[in-house]
Picture 1 (cartoon, chains in turn yellow, orange):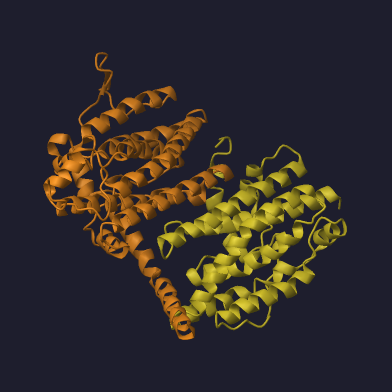
Picture 2 (cartoon, chains in turn yellow, blue):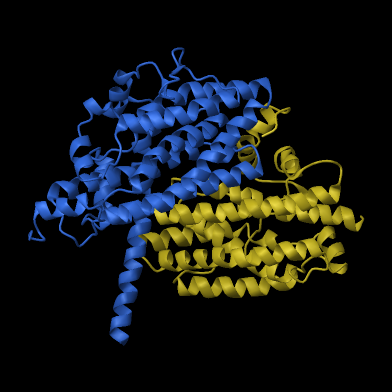
Amino acid sequence: MTTKEATYTYALRLGDDALILGHRLSELCSRGPILEEDLALTNISLDMIGRAQALLKYAADTENNGNTEDDIAYRRAENHYYNHLLVEQPNGDFAHTIARQLLISVFEYLFYTELEKSRDENLSAIAKKVTKEVKYHMQHAIDWTIRLGDGTNESHKRMQTAINDMWMYSGELFEMDEVDQYLFREGVAVDLIPLKAHWQNRIQTVLTKATLVTPEDGYMQTGSKKGVHSENLGHILSEMQYLQRSYPDAKW
Amino acid sequence: MHNEHSDAHFQLRIDNGEHIEPKDYMPEGYRKHLIRQISQHAHSEVIGMQPEGNWITRAPSLRSKQILLAKIQDEGGHGLYLYSAAETLGVSRSELIEQLQSGKAKYSSIFNYPALNWADIGAIGWLVDGAAIVNQVSLQRTSYGPYSRGMVRICKEESFHQRQGYEIMAKMMKGTKEQQDMAQDAMNRWWWPALMMFGPHDTDSPHSSDAVKWKIKRETNDELRQKFIDKTIPQAELIGLKVPDNNIQLDEKTGHYTISEINWDEFYRVISGHGPCNKQRLDHHIKYHEEGAWVREAAEAYKQKHLKKELETA
């Protein structure tokens, strides 16, 4: 493995998380519980697609074989996407959307804060921008988790169910494979192992404040770093890639 | 001197070109007219999120997806300030939403048409927002202060939308044969409904006369429609789109285009509820509003709980 190859994969993974979560959130347009929330969720989606564009462009530049960020975003097969399983999970009810947002945005806040120190100047620059955005995403998810957890009996029950349902996708966030290890040694990537304790602390604090129970770690789903996904991703891609795949000669 | 709370004094202020502000005296008819018009405008922004939202998940590039997301967000934002402007007239947002969902309040009939291919996103920006701007530019001078100020802000954003819509159409007309066909198909379906957005001919417009007297409406339906036609036909020709009307002529003397008669049967049919998407749009709004009820209740319960705690510790 060369630094170039590893960096390409690394940028792709981060870009795919933003691309797929941005897509999921964009599905919620005109479906929010109140207009303000509709706008908040699509605004987060917009941040995500912007982040995906920056990271996939960096991947394309690193690969340097004439592909653009759009080719990368729209023309890969399902098993060449490397987003975490968590972000491709369906929106479900509003509690599931918020639970997914809570788990991922707390992780991303910690992750991108570390990535700011990367020796790779491009990743570091992107990370500085992302940290600012994701701080808001995290605060939004925390506020809603507390409101729903400590709201009515129904909202409490729904929020607890949602956290429980999403929990098995959280383990994957902290897996280090050979790409992570190689780039960590190079001073490029983030060491995920020490992040886990910080993440657990923060999540537990929020859940406790929300009068919710932090689930025990049970079996954790895995696979995305090798391109093995849940059934959800294929449906996302069939929608997302529709025009690019149906009219391969067209420029949009 | 006139009594400040008389209709005559109010009309004098209007005639002097003054803005009417929320706490000022206004005749009941003026208030009612404004609530109807502003809320209809707000509902249009919100319902308009649906046809455009239909293409977000299929937007063909990262850039176009960001532009579309940002545009729809703007529309939702316009909905918010228009609801706030309506609230200054003594009606709550929940009442307004109830009126929308019961069918008592209307929204722009244009959104009862479906967005069927990607070029529809271009056509909606270029033609629908384009028609809306002509109307809204005129409304920047409307007599009710909060509405007028809202319009100034909205117009700035809408002119971006129109340019972006036109850019999509232009790009597709320069593209493959299939893209050109999509663009022309969208043009064929949106042209006439866009012209209908200005409402019936002046002679058939039920709300026009008071609205003109009160300077809520500054130009008539037909004047505004003509402005849009004159501006849009050359834009279509420039990128090679055919306007779906064989009788278009430019009157050299007046500089105005003449067009065929609009199909008013279709206009009244769609307004009365029988357009392709009337039922779908309202059902969608009601479905997600109802599905969100538990979230709104939870937010309210949380607020009350913590308000109580604060009071107890104060």
